[in-house]
Every structure is written in C-alpha cells, then in structure tokens.
Image 1 (tube, rainbow, N blue to C red):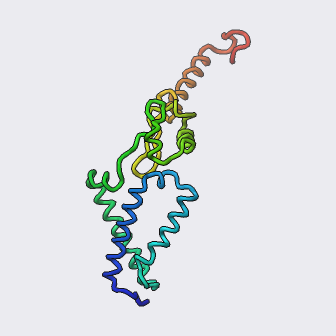
Image 2 (image 1 turned 90 degrees about the vertical axis):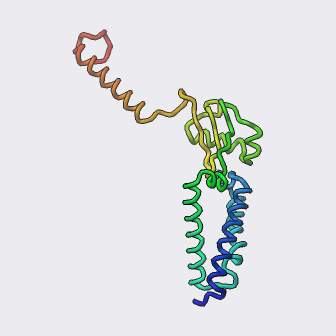
Image 3 (image 1 turned 135 degrees about the horizontal axis):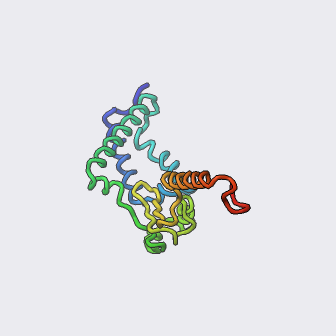
Length: 191
C-alpha cells in the first residue's frame, strides 16, 4: 500500500504525461481515431505500456495506481469541460473537420493528408447508406475521428417520415378501393 513516490509528484507526472500524449495524438492526426486498424491498436497498447513508468515511477501499489487513475480522470474531465465551454480551446485540442469529398468527388490532397485509404472511405460511404462517393454532397473527417457522410437528396435512405407518408398513401388507396366496391373494378383487378 506504500506509494513509493510522493503523491504530489505522481499527480504532476500524470498530468505531464497526459498532456504529452494528447499533443502526440493531436499531432498524429485523426486517422488513428477514425479507423483503428491492427497496427494502430498495437501502437496504442504499447504506448500505454511505455508511459506507465513515467506516470507511476517505481510505485506498484494499489493506492498509487488508484491515485494515478483518479488524477487522469479528473484532468480529462476538466479539459473536456473547458473545451466544451470554449470553442476556440476545443478547436485547438481536437482540430476542425476536414472535408474529404465534395459534390460526389474525393479531394485527393485532403484524403492523402488524412492518412485514410480510399478503400476505407468507400466502406464508410456504404455504411452510411451510399453506394459510392458520387452519391454524396460531402464527406468529412470530424474532430473526434468519425467520418460524416452527407448523401444527395435522392440517395438518402428512407426515414420515419418517408415511411409514414407511404403508409398514408396506402391507407388512401385502400379507402378508394373500398369505395369502388366489389365488381366495380376492371376484370382481374384487386377486390
């Protein structure tokens, strides 16, 4: 249960390592967050192991680990709140959206800078309801690493309003057929 190093030093070390990792991930780009592949996962796992000793030092105690975890959570919660209150600070921490496609065409320089493959981007378009980039008005890599696909009007998937409109039309057709009555329709028509 002995901490091994003073708690004040542990808190300072934790905050410094948190900030260094934050800067490195921000500098490394949003691609790591958008499409975490096997290589990125290995880097993240090793990164956690590499910085462990910088945070806790020679301390292997439960109390020291709990304290370090608490400091990480508090610092993260504070930065997230400050970023949500200040759009300027939020953009500094997270960046701004990057447009990867516009009017149905990939923007090659933006795609290249993002570090994402065209194949991954094509899959993202398909996951969000499109057949290919030609059906989009825009595709952007958001600050949190998600890909936002905006489909053209006619290429969007049906929503609840569309289904409700179809149901209303079907109900109206049923009423018209009911008013016609049996035998008043053409031969072979619905009864």
